[in-house]
Length: 270
Image (cartoon, rainbow, N blue to C red):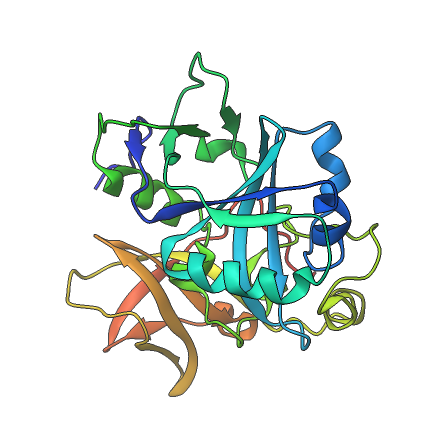
């Protein structure tokens, strides 16, 4: 199957959380992995919230619109994120609520509209835009296949909450983490993973050489050993979390070989 390069569609699995108030910068700065001060010069940020143990909990985009910050998050995690943010709010001068008026779209071309931004993870992903009535021009599967072919995880869909380690999923190269800001929840263990070099697995885009019924959660094998797990699939494309040492051998699922691809953006240890 040809990888789509032309797309314009609404992402129906995204929800917008609106944050207003004078303390929103100080509030978010201490709990997310990205540096919100970058919003002074950048239009959109990609960031995470981690557990105290440095494991994945949420991923989202942040944009600034009309004096408020809009958090673009997977719908399945939106209400949970609102509740989590409310726990940290204390007496901060902020309001946090879901805004049902906004919709999230993606496009391969830049649109002549105010709230259209190049995807901060990778330019090959095109543009994210925010409007109140987005009508699909192409199937959303076109975008999903492109995303998988580029090896870009959708956190809430593909990663495992409270288990996935951000650096195994390329969150450093995909600009979700600032290494120059102050402390945030999970920062110590995330920094240790980076500087001590403890990353032994990575997520890779894969293609199946033999069509079949494959399911998320199924295991990959090499030389009789379990070496990874399928985390996403669409048509013949998937994302697999794999042990780096297994890349030197043939990897298979259900005795069918797969092809592992190294994305151009990925940096692996030498």
